[in-house]
Amino acid sequence: MSSFKIAVFLSGNGSNLQSLIDTKKINNDHSLNISVVFSNNKNALGIKRAKENNIPFFTLDPKKFNSREAFDEAIIDKLKDFDFDLLVLAGYMRILSEKFVKTYEDKIINLHPSLLPKYPGLNTHEKIIENKEIHHGATVHFVDSGLDTGQIIGYSKFEVNDYDLTSLEQKVHEIEHKLLPLICSLIKNDEIKFIDKILTINGLEYSNGKEYIF
Image (cartoon, rainbow, N blue to C red):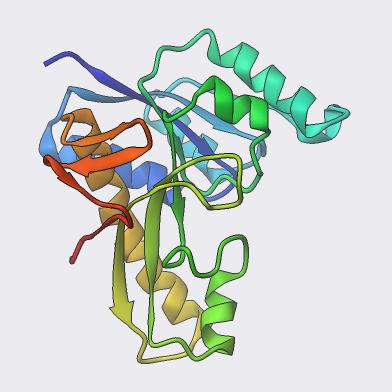
């Protein structure tokens, strides 16, 4: 099987990058490769993870650009040096410009810490606590020009028993670290297809994504 290459964007800890690295090591899967890691934060722990695992990386400071569009154009230019089949936003805390999304249309997925379409954007755990939601979880979706509005691919949830911020964050991370590698593997194996805005998983159509239970 030919190698399937992933570009990973992150802004901080990079624990979901680590989950992809660990999945490859555990499964000894040499057909799944991370070809490059990018961060808008040169001090991100995720960059250290890339270094430790000999993964190519680069960083750019958005403060040095006049606009989001100019920043994203610089990223696009740098990405020309790397080959990848899928671009994964794994804790990337910036909204992509419309040009960026169109450049890599239907090749970008995002991992979001809520059960979309509920609670797009930031502070999802706080909103769960504030609204005393019964369930919380994580969602992987294709990226479009809206804020967390793209086609949902898959999600996983748990019942909230403790409205404690640290506890919720930990449980969501546990789900994310299973959900993201699984979705990437399914895309790699061509089991997930997104053609003409129609999502199919193993030949079945899913308009609102598929639930995965871990």
